[in-house]
Length: 324
Ligand code: 13P
Ligand code: SF4
Image (cartoon, rainbow, N blue to C red):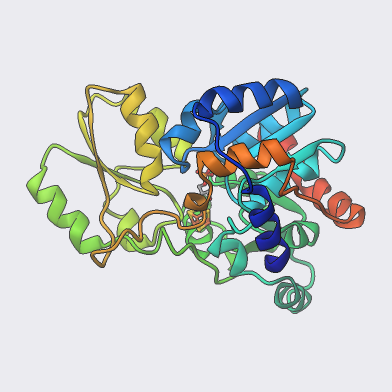
């Protein structure tokens, strides 16, 4: 897949970039009758040009509802794949096909099939951050904003496998009191936050509230006064009387936080090393330029076999029904 991706990328970048990229993208949007969906972790320019910005659940819902002929997905591969699962007849483009996800990659389909076979009678609840192959092996999909709600609706006596994020899985266990069998996957970004540096920041900023995404390790979550999906964190900052926040998730979300609460101060939670490891390297592969080339050349396109799509659609629909 990566060789194809590389060839497609080289192909797409032939030619001159227009001087006004924003205007050129708007005009291509009309030409394609397209909608641009963007995750909160995308760079500010992409968030600003998007028709809809959201967390994984909101983006799945927006993809399900759109009347556009083409979906330009500014996010990572599993998100664009989700849009394709819900819209087989639409053109779904991802600006950079290499925009993967460490969490999705931590759950290879063959290993997961063996894991599932070793746990007969278990219902499989999979976090949306997984490949279409894993979705196809699942009973219900969830996102960080509805995982607790979904597990709570499953009868208590029903054993459950939760995949692929062990941190979200452990958080759901704590919230629901359920005993889940966890696949041991994780996100490179959310595992990078330093508990020690967050504690030091809280000492320097005694009025600040720490808020965190449930993909973080428990050592970080225990310092958070609020835990939620990106959309939930955004809402919390807007509504809370607090003026300063230490934000333990990918710092791309701070662009919207700052826009929606301009009088407040947002401090990105620092990683363990002096690196930019709190930035998702996959999300950052998408740029405004690549978005333009993708629309101009109608590639790279997300495709999948109809068998896998149909099998992955069932647990997706179950999630959408269970999280109204
Ligand atoms: P949400 O969009 O559900 O907040 O998840 C964040 C994430 O890690 C996306 O990859
Ligand atoms: Fe995947 Fe983590 Fe990046 Fe989200 S932040 S896309 S879970 S690698």
